[in-house]
Length: 551
Image (tube, rainbow, N blue to C red; front, side, top):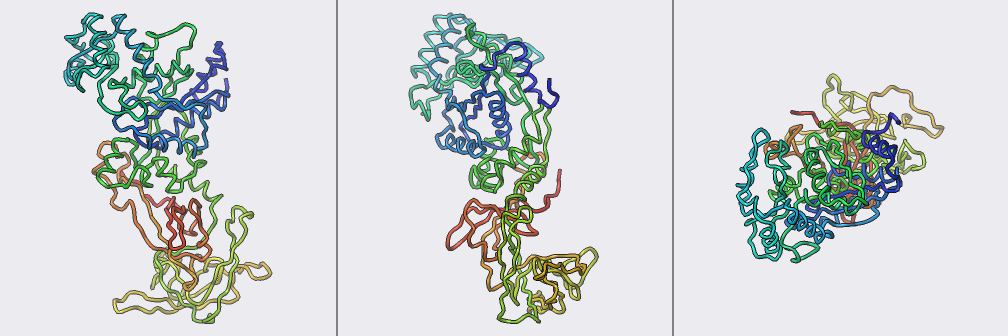
């Protein structure tokens, strides 16, 4: 067996070796439509769809819509949009609700076989009676109801006779099992809510455990892949399947893999909903959370996201991946596809005293040094420029190699300059910097000869009269703690978003929504909106990792 295969591929290869027909291999990706997909879902989707491609097997997109509370068509459409963004195409779209009637009939079968009963106890009492793995549970007072009584009561549940919470249908398995999931789990509960697909047709809804394996069985999913948190539910998954098993059909095999845990972020839908309700974030597609829609707004590419997941790999070991690894793969991709431009965030005026006042020189620059096919552009150069405020110090200090009085730097794609004086305002703040330039020091003269003078720093800049303002959203991780899941509301980063106005070279006036750019010396940015009056950019990632690791 090939050593480079991950453990799930090895299991499938072993199944094929033992005679499982390759034409019966089938996978599914089963999200619940109660929120947007997040980065953890990418791992599950990539795994299923790439295995489908490898084995020429169909992959179903099945919506696990067993709980009408919180589920909606809006979430379904967002999920489909995200999967298409990732470059995946499903063979069939299905819903757990498609099988509600069949699940109901199978539940009746279990009642008739004395393997399920209606329990009138409250959820609190049921939970108490389950006890813990180290002591046997307590049987419900209703566990030994007659089959006829259970059939009668279950039909009344279905017909809306009982109120929510008044009773449930439970499987009769083993109240002494060390696996708590086997202690008479709930199969159906009453929810008097409208379902996005079936409306008010049903008022009893199957639980996830009763639904999931049976849907896999109906659709004849050969390998049911799920995260490790479902490992202790496998005995229940298999128990349910064996109650309905038809020897002419295959029984799905559940295989668990480690979920994707990233530092400085949360993926819990409940916690994301909390952040929205408290107005800490704006919506499910806020760029500060790692929903696929949020990452897309931030400028993350599907290629980079998939490369990141492949690098993390498929294992059974849970750990926390540092978010800097994700940003590394984003930079890797954007470095190849993003045109370079110059934008100044915090401008300070630079005046070149020996440059002609009314002259504009159009300097040629490469759009992307990584790829000559991107071509070149013309950048206006003039006497009055903006540079970054933090690129200048009045008095030079150790390890500061940018512009200081008496020191030389190169202006990107242009000339070497030397600062000689400054003008301050009444507050003592630097208002403008005066310098001179060397006309013979152009980055490459007309003969293509590079100036050989050793200059330690190169600064980006824009011509003041040719530049124009752009709106920039700067994003940092939303949480200060490396693992915020336990106390996420106490470690929120109040500096997770900042909105500033930058000044851009004129070529950016042509920027269109959805395009990527590298702001030279700063980072990668994504055009969220572009109109005649305003262009808005979202920060994707800085050129270098600026996020300091914390607890």
